[in-house]
Image 1 (cartoon, rainbow, N blue to C red):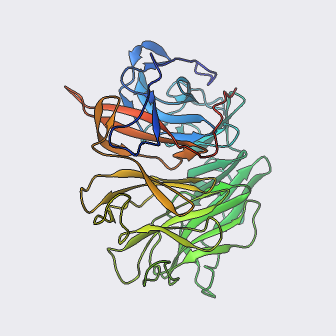
Image 2: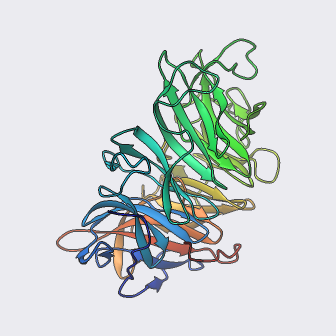
Length: 416
């Protein structure tokens, strides 16, 4: 039985390097590759990684060595968070969490939340505290929908902060909404019976990306029944009035356009950052934040990339799994450019964007052939990302930690 208690392993060596081609102030530490042992069977090496999440120095990621699992720990020491052999907290069933790649989220105290498939409860919210795997309070299908009718059918897209989960849930008769889950139970933040702010009577129709929660405030994206109105909003985690951060028709800073759709947003204790498209130009996309006060532009598709007099940003992603993160007034994002079409990771703080690393750079003596980040890629002065490296006969999947010079230092403390 997998209890979730630490079963540790170490990389043969911790590799700290500077990436050839990257801006020199960032240093990079290898957190896992094809020389990393699976802690369940140390003779079995890992060969598949998905994007890591990071918080307070702890990372969590899906990997495949001796079968699939979600691993967590402080590099270079990891343990299994959940795999096929993990006994469900309901004591009835084990987990089958890997029909899709799970994306674990970590809170400030090292608790982990993710969705897994259990035999008894269907897709359920999990979290770990003090080494014990638990079901989130009242967060599994079959539970009563607060302020709704009947029971939940599915629950997904969790975020966790200070032990409180924010998540999406839906039920029969097209019910759906954003809820928080804590030791006090389940609280409705917003659902399809809630009036979309500024419309008078139009109701919310969908909540189409992962919500966020930080310092007792929930952030979410939603659209109105008209399907032409989109907005990003915040609300107290205990329930209450909605506050509009931005919605369709608002002016997009630094351009002549107004906001059309909102593909993705992230929040932290310092504010909200989101992608937006223009109402009158499907090719125009920008990234905006309210860190520091009024809404400001980080970049858009007319902005020159760092170090170039001609190339502008392009290939901006959008969607639930898009690589965008923020923490402590800092933002990281993935974008391409019109000159090379090579995706790169960029870092923003106090109005300045810096390139961290791009496709074609060298890490550990090998060329980067692709880059990706998850929904929680930055914490303090650390950025966690996945890189595929050129190698013969086959490329190597790896995960890395970039250290940001001059940022608030992230303590790499062990959790129990």
